[in-house]
Amino acid sequence: MKPKNLFVFFALAMTLAFSVSANEISRSGGPRLVMASVEHSFGVVKPGAPLTYTFEVRNEGEASLEIKNVSPSCGCTTTKFDHEIGAGKSGSITLAVEKTDGYKGEVTKTATVTTNDPNHPTFTLTLRATFNE
Image 1 (cartoon, rainbow, N blue to C red):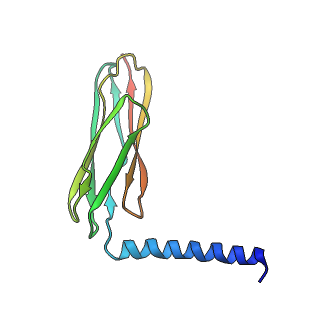
Image 2: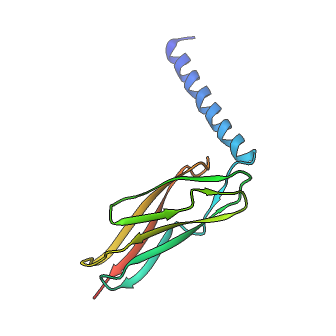
Image 3: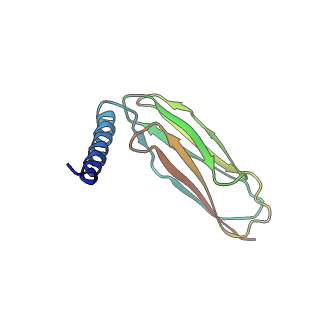
């Protein structure tokens, strides 16, 4: 077999092995993250009004769901979250922006969540608000 063909064969074999492994984990009763929504809009708010929202996280899998990290896109957003959610249980991730003085117009704040769910290893939560005096 030519070196180029051998490389392509090896790459395809590795891709198949990793995808089969991930499917076996999800079928063999691993964690399964379920959320109603990954976005929340506060609508129109006045500058200075703090923004706080709690996203519900359900684990419909057969193993514990680990929320490894919640990383806001900026330092103005704080987080509080359940680090481990048992099988069949619910938990939460709260995002908060306490100081909104001086905010004008449409504002979007995000946070990247990292989990041990093989089908949702990372995803983004989004808060939206329109500041109007």
